Length: 286
Image (cartoon, rainbow, N blue to C red; front, side, top):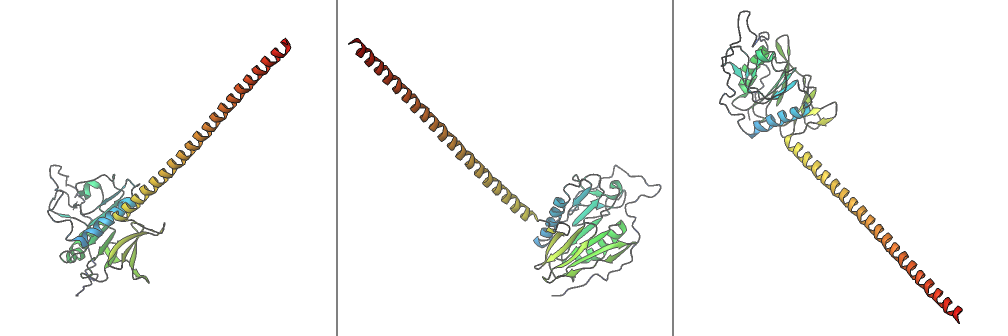
């Protein structure tokens, strides 16, 4: 297996200015910006799973933030009036967005800013462009953090690379490998730790709550467990209500039986008293 370290790619990049109109340029609203470039979303499951898991985890994490926009494989146009100059990050996050509603594409000049965070999931056919061309594009655009993950273990070493933009240049973020063999680094932009677990699984961790962000499968499992727990609780509640109702019915039946017994006793006493009175009448007539 041949691996290549792409972190030594040219660090010098032009200052961020992509998508900003010149003084005499006007946004031509008649230009259409396609929502698809005809390229597949991911080459294989190796790329698709970390892409969708990451987008889903981030969407759930920032679900209460209407100013955070999260997308996967969405076209980003960064030059005004040019619908051919575009890039499609595997994952990107924008803070301070004008709403988190779905979009067909992201137009930097109309939205008012570029993504703050970008992650590319490497494949044998894309990793070199991710490391050089896209890296330059994102730096020009002003993307604060750029991360790359290699799910194949064959494109570059180590399998996770994170960089932050400092004065127009990307500088590598520190990564650590813990005793369990997990490589991780902190994203200051997201406020999360980014991990690669043994088996080259990409995961996000919330250091504040000390919890892993759940994948869609884990979310579904948790949802089903919650539904099962709710049903079990509901069954227990209904059983308790049934038992209480049966107890109440038994109490009412006992009271009814007692009342019936008391009525019979009173009738019997009345009959006895009538007979005694009749007997006394007979005795006094003799």
